[in-house]
Length: 306
Image 1 (spheres, rainbow, N blue to C red):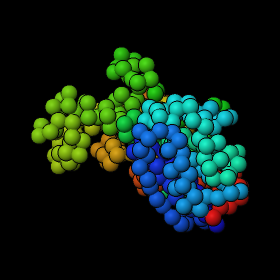
Image 2 (tube, rainbow, N blue to C red):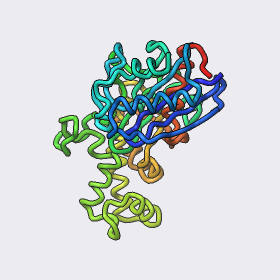
Image 3 (cartoon, one colour):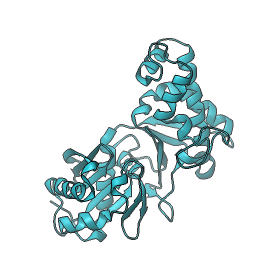
């Protein structure tokens, strides 16, 4: 019988069911439609989970961007899901599905993405690695010894908020020069526009990458510089946790081939001792989150659903 996972995003709620052997049984997506309010979102999310096989006496894994009160299952803060702030996700979904809220397993979206990639994706059979999601911001999730490492309060892996340039751009978190102000897709568009790149359409990352692949020039130099900042960020987990494997997800990760030379140069500048880094593109795409969420229910040894 399959295990069900949901992944809440600002645009869509994705979900699916996975068998205990890793076979994908079903996969569906619905619009988040956050403007309708939290009650409506919870109603539709529960119906999605039910259609995938979640039922009374079973279990459910949930991935969601934000900061949680883990003991209560409450989403405290989320820039892209502000309409759900204050909502007890575990209780609301559990009640609608007749599932004990203790069997609704809630985790950060980057963490479940890491868990999904470790189970069925790019990091299959790799016990120790970190995932970086390069999108609007820079997220991170850590797997150590084959298990998620979330820290005592569940906030481990926030690599997007390590400071790379103390006098750099102001970050939404209040600090300056955080990694996500320098190496997210948002930051890359800003940096490209500031340099007038590409000339045909400044800030167009797809065109920037195409131009950089076709010939050496300013576009390739910019992506090297962004990669170098990423490498400086990777030096933190490399030095602290001896991590050498990194998986890159998110839309901007499509430029990994162009970022890689800078990443390796930047990491070499900041790591203690020589490190042989493994840099991998994620392979599960937008499915990684719900797959990792489903794995949370499986790992908990909860009653199978279906």
